[in-house]
Length: 409
Image (cartoon, rainbow, N blue to C red; front, side, top):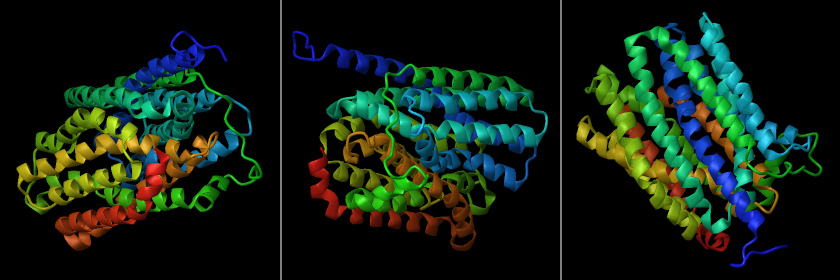
């Protein structure tokens, strides 16, 4: 294998540079698309179309349905011999088509239907992207290389959320132009992923008839399975509070009844700002630190944030909790997106990631519904305490894995 004067393979260096360059574009496009799914789309179906609870729930759950279905996508695409970049780009291309069609739809069923399919598709491609990182980024630099596109994701999401909100406040009919724009962003993301250098997706031996076959790694790799179990508890405790944060601040039932500006500040501006500020910090720790200890530290930040958020009606304490949540998300995004690269054997990153992403989808679909059910029975303060307790339990569960985590670095 040819080397240049400083002992590095020039082909590998070019692969890294090309992957990183297109990942920056992908990160910027992803920020607008994530806001389009979680905020703008839901706002339009509520305010413009007066959708019922079923449609609102489907729109809110679409990204998590896509995550759950990713395990099926990896299984069936692995039989095609296509490159990982093409496997990742095709679902995003489908999302682009659906976003354009949603912009043209006149009924709530047409708009929401295309929206749901589009955001299922765009979130089903995550395992292929992680596998590309595993192949193309050196292990000791993955966190740093991943963090810069993530910063662009957060930045573009903040800018787009304010711009889209201003347009919709001005005239709700501008939702069509917004979703045409989102369609072009999806095309841009699809192109960026397609241009990343990649290898064919690895074929699974002996499991071609079973799309859930990748779940075997939970049992074949007990350390991986235990971390996933801990993560499921932690993630469930976090995801079921996401819609409740808005409910807690906006509703008159809990003594706050905040303005739209206060809701936006405490649920978006404060956490996203602290997420942005701390992303580089967590990225450096991911590359250098025992991953299990890092995950435990992030869990504690989440527990502090969620506990403080629901502790009181005082906006300043809620803001402090929101800041801790934002700090935790800065590290959580990096850990969530890259941790399987420390556990998966060579050639198995997509399979391992499909299991992780799929289980995230399960808790993302079930968590908010259970959260609302619990809120009506125990109240927001107890929700905060229960969630923080679950997060601390998930942290304690990782103590036996600390030594194994050191060996993964």
